[in-house]
Image 1: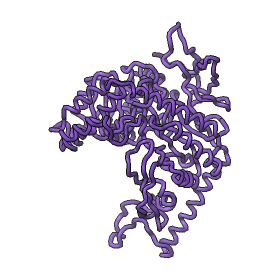
Image 2 (image 1 turned 135 degrees about the horizontal axis):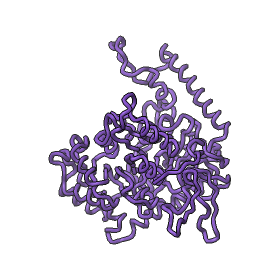
Image 3 (image 1 turned 90 degrees about the vertical axis):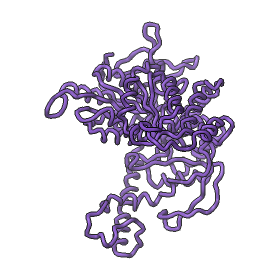
Image 4 (image 1 turned 180 degrees about the horizontal axis):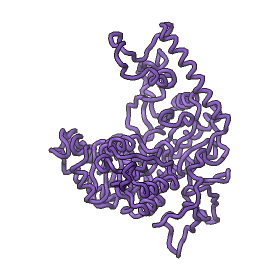
Length: 552
């Protein structure tokens, strides 16, 4: 992807690259502070092109106005709270009952300040009810509010054929029923909807075993285990792998499920800067040298937690460098591929395939079926002894209901489709179409002058909006144009980095993407959102690393 400003992040370093006459990319790629050729000894490198990511800073005046907007909103919030306390304005928020006024409150009043005074102003942009399958087009139930978004009422009107730019339907598997879903219908008729038991008791079906064998084959690992909920796959299995006396090194932008699992484990948690190998190596070195606090005993285990694609930033994990570090310091690697499985790699097998690495380099694979596979649930995969251990000790296996049979069949159907086991190449074509759509959409947004984050191959594309008022205006105006987008703000993002998050799908046609891009171009001019000046990263500490070598 061209970078007219001159700089793009290549494997963590600012790197200028260009196109040769034959269309291939040329130049050396800086990795871990050391320049290495893409070809070494005549053999292809593990990743034959620069890892290009963009994290551009906003102009100073944009940040000033963003903080001013929050400041003014906060002042008016205090004024309205004062008016509510004196009965001048009606209070629609939840309050403690009068008979409990002498009790210690369940929550402090200020904890709800942001929700009560800022979020409510733009609440209509979230939780919009959908009444169709989340394909490239979907239908939205129209609703209005008569009390400034405290409550909503439905008008009875359906907004049809809205272009869906928010669902994680990367490969278009979440769609209306057609003949290809016949096997799902047959499983529903034969097995019913629910299992009504845990995996430990009477909840393990032949469909679960079939799916687990297929997942292991898809990932090219020894074994896999599936779970009924993606979030619980992380939060309930990490505590089974590590505990007191263990150390978890977690990326600062990890998903809430990883954070919760780490906290529930009782292990010591230390955070390293996002995708920053210098920060991670510093923590690893200190862990090996100093051991546990006070006792100085060696850690029982050191577990590195990362994601394949980070859902708020659109960045891809720097896997080769992390694998080199984990081998050097004898740590374990746990990778969450919720967003990357099915969406990156030549055949959709995730970031390990994306970088051309050995599946054995990762100790614990985690992924979900909610995105690329159009279903629900998650999996843990890796060595057979690891999976056998989790079958006994996993909290989800012991206490959570097993995956629904039709859900399992939908995953089986989708995975066989991607692998070509259905006798066609349509699955591979969708993986390639997703890559084409992703690069086209990102390239056009860059040309228009928007600030976007993430890797050029990531189908998750954050577009920075910054100001809270523009967040609301952006989503509302686009819905009027029959374009559904997801807008994200604090606390899911830093206070001054509110954004719209586009999720590209293989089901999107070029005409649909062009219609969205045309609307975004007009919206960018109307709301003055084209902030890009092609400057360097807003987080220079992520990429300005000193030179250091990683030994295999």
